[in-house]
Amino acid sequence: MIKNPICVALDTPDVARAQELARLVKPYAGYAKLGMEFFYAAGPKGYETVAKEGLPIFLDLKLHDIPNTVAYGLRSLMRLDPAPAIINIHTTGGADMMRAAAEAVDGRAILIGVTILTSLADADIHAAGFAKDLSGRDHAAALARLARQCGLDGVVCSAPDVRAVKQATARDFVTVVPGIRPADAAVQDQKRIATPRSALDEGADILVIGRPITGAADPAVAAHDIARSIEASHAH
Ligand SMILES: O=C(O)c1cc(=O)[nH]c(=O)n1[C@@H]1O[C@H](COP(=O)(O)O)[C@@H](O)[C@H]1O
Image (cartoon, rainbow, N blue to C red; front, side, top):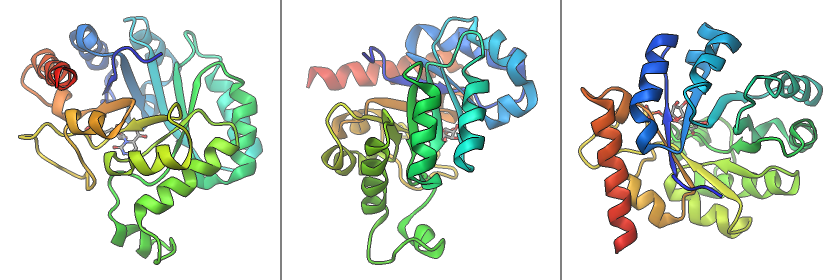
């Protein structure tokens, strides 16, 4: 069960900074996310230092390779202590790769597949070779359906894709949604965005939020404000 949907992306190469951010946001968040910027610099030791702060970790390394390599990569990552609560791969690695990943993780973490990145608009995915008669949302829903068939627990998608993804899969198929921006926040490199409240209204299960919190003058205040904006949405 997901109690607090806020997952703070600790995107920094610096272990002490990530640890400090984890401490600051812990009262207001359900998860901390460690991704490429952190893990490539700080490695398993850095991961374990931050994980000891107590927030369950979403280890976001978006594995994308042949089935054998992804499966053994995940086996290595699942030996981290504590093991990640959530881990992800790319759905475009194909069905055999996703099945191998599900077998490797074997229910020990929530296994999530990235569909269409929140930094991509329809024109971007069409330019990348995805069928032009389908929208990014259609592609996200199709990839999510395949991911579910292959034993994944959920997907990463944008807020505008959540309803289509749930329709193509199941209500309890987990949707992890980045590209979250409070109304007054800078959009930066994200293209398909939503406020925390509107993403939850679409049915998002987990909200991945980085720079609106980590780039704020006071990350604790920013996280608290977002947590309050979500509570207010439940009252409506
Ligand atoms: O897998 C992800 O977490 C992810 C997928 C996606 O489609 N878009 C996306 O932004 N992310 C991650 O979510 C975080 C968003 O950070 P901010 O844009 O700073 O809020 C980053 O750590 C991204 O790596």
